[in-house]
Structures are given as C-alpha cells and as structure tokens.
Amino acid sequence: MIKLDDFLAHDAVDPRLTALIASVVEACGQISALVRRGAAGEILGALESQNVQGEVQKKLDVISNEILLQRCAEAPGLVAMASEEMDDIYPVREVGPEGGYLLLFDPLDGSSNIDVNVSIGTIFSILPAPRADGPRPAATADFMQSGRNQVAAGYVVYGPQTTLVLSLGNGVRAFTLDPLNDEWVPTAHAITIPHETKEYAINASNLRHWATPVRSYVEACLAGEEGPRGKNFNMRWIASMVADVHRIMVRGGVFLYPWDAREPDRAGKLRLMYEANPMSMLVEQAGGAAFDGQGHILDAEVTSLHQRISVMLGSRAEVEHLMALHAEATGV
Ligand code: AHM
Ligand code: MG
Image 1 (cartoon, helix red, strand yellow):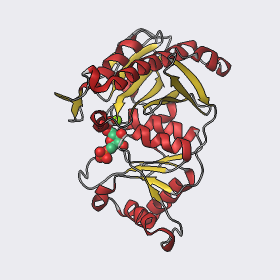
Image 2 (cartoon, helix red, strand yellow):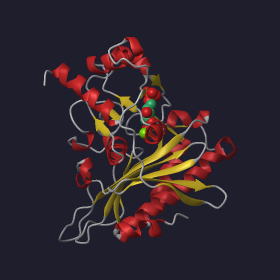
Image 3 (tube, protein in one colour):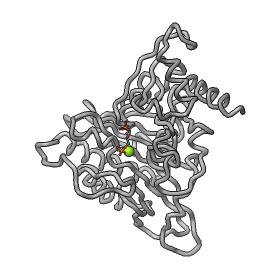
Image 4 (tube, helix red, strand yellow):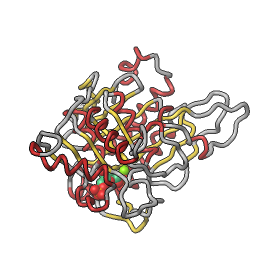
C-alpha cells in the first residue's frame, strides 16, 4: 500500500484526488505483479482484436485496462475515464455541481516489448471534471482540455524495478515498489532533468521519412566532435516511451517520436491525451521542455480523444536547439 495520504498531506490536495491517485497506483501494483508472472501466468501473446488505433491488442493490454477500470471506478471523485484501449469514454458518475476528476491512461505502453521481457509501463493523466448545475452524463467534450489543465500526471515503469513517477504540479517525485512488502517507498523527492545532454532517443530506421529539421538534428548528432555540435552523442531506443522517458528523468537526454512522411496526414505516432500530455507535464515539472515541432505540447489544441502528436521532449537546452532548427526551417 502506498502511504500517499501521508505523503501528499502537505500539498493540501483535494482528498478525492489523493484517493484517485491511490487507486491508479494500486491498479499499477496489480499490473506489476502480472507483468512479473509473464508466461508463467499465461498472459502473454496477442488477441484477435484491434484497438481504435487499428493496433493488434495484446492480452496484457486488455487485462491492464480492465484492472485500471475496475480499481478506479471505486474512487469517490472520479467522473469518467478514457484509455488508449477503448474507442469511447467510460462514464462512472454524472457531471454535477461537485466537479471531480477525469482520468486518462495508456494501460500498458510499449506493447511490442511485452512478449520479449523488456521494460513497459502505464501512463496516466488527471484532468478536472467540469462543474454543471444539474447532473448530466459525462461526455467526450468534457475531456477536450489543454494539457495545461492537468492536475496530476504520472507513469509507472515495469522494469527491473517497478517505479512510480508522479507530479501534482509542484515538482516530480518517485516511489519504488518494494516487492518484500508491497509498499511504495519514496525514492526521489525532486527530480530534475539535467539541462544539457549528449544522449538522444529516436527510432532511426525512420530517418528517410523525417522532416528536414529532425533529420539535420540527428545527422549533426551522428557527426559527433567533427560536426556542427562539436561533441559526441550516445543513442538509446527502448521502444517503450515510459522506459525512455524514465532514463531521461534519471540522467537527462532527449526523446523524439516526430511526424514523418509515412502517413503525412497523421501528426505523429504517439497520442496527445494519455501519452504526450502527461509525459510533457512531468518533463516540464522536472525542468525540461516538450515540443511538437510548432509549440509546447502542453499548449497543443485538443480536438479528439485519440489524436496524435509529434513529440520531442527532455533536457531543456537540447529541446531548445530542436526548436531553433524548426524555426529556421519555417523562417520564423
Ligand atoms: P503503444 O502505446 O502501442 O505501445 O505504442 C507506443 C510506443 C512507445 O512506447 C514507443 O516510444 C513507440 O511506440 C515505439 O514505436 P516504434 O516501434 O515505431 O519504434
Ligand atoms: Mg502507448
């Protein structure tokens, strides 16, 4: 059990928000236990179904989604949920004068890593629910809020350790799940991403499809000391955003999943509401920056629950460099 009540007491957080976060974290503890069982629990492999993005669902994607739905529906202030694995919102209570919260999540990010025993994670975002005079059913439109409205964001990485990284808008903290007693132990009180870095993360197999600023950026990194950046870079790509972002939280770096020309009408691969927005809040709260090729991700206009966005986030100086390259390309 996480001692969140104790931990958040000094933040004067609405107890309904604390209870909701505790429910999310309990669900993640349960998912962590399943992930650890792996093939022994007969929960690996794919289903025949596809999610709304047209991606094949893994058994564990669907099970994790169910666990989060069941656990969080009990949280007193929760009005509705939305997930990468569900086409539509999942209403829990009516919208009324008392407000409350909306929860969004990617129940198991990095699905392609599930069956190969590589780190995966859960990402979540909490928005305020609107207040209405009379009770009315929750609607998708209630979720159409800027990332700046998030009251909390977090992820849990299921790696060699299970770690929760959480922000309520006043810095970033980490808790590690101690398997000896199932307690979430506070392990970092104020995570700060190093301002500068020599490490980047991108799926370089897509190089030929990138727009000029991203291609120039990576080519300059590859050129090392002899190139325009005058320094050598290292590259990492785990193919789990949670694991790649966690590395950046710990030692800095920059993560890119940019727009590319494979599907020119699609803004990017990653989803704004339950991947890019919560990660951007965490990164900004840790002193980093998050950019979509045009502006700050947290300021991006929200048009639909499953909308995609181009993502470049991490160490501030490196993201600012990417911003400058994009500004040059557009002549701004
Ligand atoms: P998912 O939510 O279906 O798992 O997809 C998101 C994941 C990210 O975690 C990761 O950064 C990216 O997809 C990897 O994509 P690729 O396989 O194209 O490198
Ligand atoms: Mg995902």
